[in-house]
Length: 334
Ligand code: ATP
Ligand code: MG
Ligand code: FE
Image 1 (tube, rainbow, N blue to C red):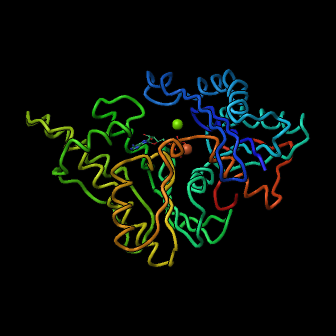
Image 2 (tube, helix red, strand yellow; image 1 turned 90 degrees about the vertical axis):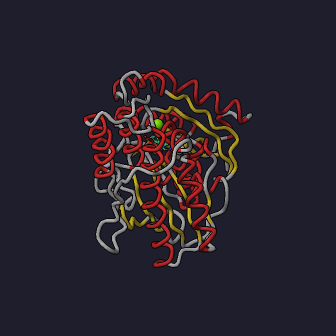
Image 3 (cartoon, rainbow, N blue to C red; image 1 turned 45 degrees about the vertical axis):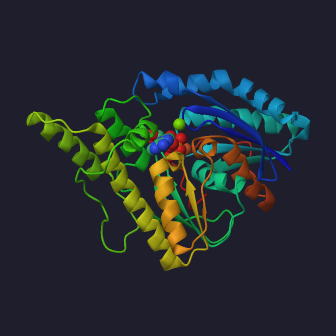
């Protein structure tokens, strides 16, 4: 089964052809990062307009790179939420047009289900499993008993992990998106700046990053007032240490409590070296298999959407042609 995946939820226009939900034949990504950089974040209207300009060519390129035509495609999988509504609608409209014109099924995919299923492009899932989802808009611990079933054990109460990275990066005068820059800088420093760890109530699987972000800003501010300088690399290393310690330890606690057979790492922040290394070490120590997608499949892409769409294809969970973009689509009801 060849599925054409389409993703336009934020600032990446992407199309991909995936065979049987596992094998990536093409994964074309037109990023708008350079355009949004000057605004220090994604500007929704600009993103929608860019998606409109890019979508047709991106789909054509994905088919061509895969050596396929629309005649070979058995279904269209598209992100319909969560995300920016104007951005989502461009992908959804394109997917509906192809579905209608070619008479092939349309599949609506939850963006975070896509991030999780990026892992299945690397290795088969082994249930029950725990997925740690860390992206620009989400930070969640997800419990999966079987394909397509998502139970949220905990989530962020304020900022998402990626959001915290981007805000701290901005305070350190780094360009948007700042996550990768902090990651690089962190490896040049030592975590010697005292920063809090937000464990929240005992037993809670929720996260909170806004207190940590404020602590970083206060540290910078107080040092400036005293005429001292803080080595940015050490501050980045300390921030990364706090974020990754809480993420990794809560994940491992969930693994033990629920008896998971596998851990998946998902979302744009899964590209973070510090997080990958720490989770790898801890999972190895506990003897629990860990899957991490390659960098190219961590940030937004359509291959992960096609991979998640394949599960719905197999279950016959198709969308009607009145499918709409849903900006705040929930994962557990998906
Ligand atoms: P969501 O998936 O929640 O809708 P999104 O699609 O905007 O949000 P992703 O594309 O999954 O988010 O991830 C982008 C985020 O990942 C940004 O916040 C970016 O800074 C962060 N990020 C990317 N690489 C790294 C890294 N190496 N270290 C830390 N953060 C990173
Ligand atoms: Mg993005
Ligand atoms: Fe994403």
